[in-house]
Amino acid sequence: MSHAQDAFLARRFGVFNHFLSYRPGSEVRADIAEFVTDWNWCVDHFDVEAVAKRLHDIGAGYYCITLMQGFKYMIAPNETFDRIAGTKPGEACARRDLIMELSDALKKYDIDLYLYYTGDGPHLDPLLGPTFGFQQVFGRHVTRDFVEKWASVLREYSLRYGDRVKGWWIDGCYGDGFGYSEELLGILYDACKAGNPDCLVSFNDGVKPEYCKHYSGEEFTAGEFNDFETLPPQRFIDGAQAHILAPLGNDPENISHWRRKGSRYTKEHMLDFVRKANAVGCVVTIDIWVELDSSWDDEQTAILKYIGDNL
Image (cartoon, rainbow, N blue to C red):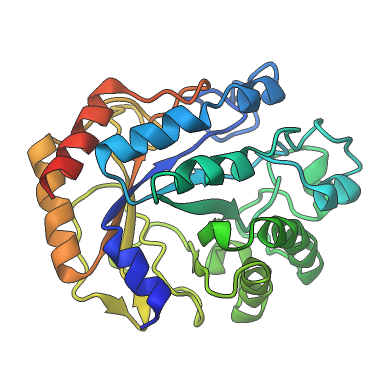
């Protein structure tokens, strides 16, 4: 048990946003993703003050947002990425340092910041996937060279933001699918810790039927589920703080419901789940819809406020 784990549990619940280069509702596939016309425009129009105020109003203890997912578009500048990729500032990495501004806005309300990153890099990008050394073919394993390159991008972010970032949720670290081992995960882990040794780190090995720990050093469970139904047996899972990340949205055509509007659950169900999870010692992260202008879905916002008002 650490002070950082205790502080995380004390936050009770938080909000997750997939703020990405392809339009909400598009699938993460290179052949069908509907990309925005101007990624810099989207990042420039993300209203950090409005989002921070909204999080405060609903009583969320923390906020987690994607730095990237699948493609080359990063939410903040990164010289290491540009050097490896051969891209110019603003071409792949946004010119605006949204994370720095967001952390300033959240600090006014004592709301913690967590960041989403991946273990598979820009693997869906037909040019930069090969440049970094990994393309999406499930069953094709990552190499140490790729992981070191991709971790160097992560390290730059970690060093820049320091203790502004309380934790990292690293997706796409599949053991069977991508060949991620304890040794390779350790490279990403060290990059996360470079800027803040006290930050919490979790690696996602995909949806599991139960809460589990994927890497020996990780401090909280990735806890990816497709619904808010499963509770952990106790607070710690092999020393990792129990944590769940699941989507609130409702899309009959998508079994996972990530980054979707609406809700499959009543406000009463969600409040009851968060209460029961917290009572066991589990932190709850709720994925919701976010528009390209950083606005949220009204129905989901009302449910989140109901949770915050009644916990």
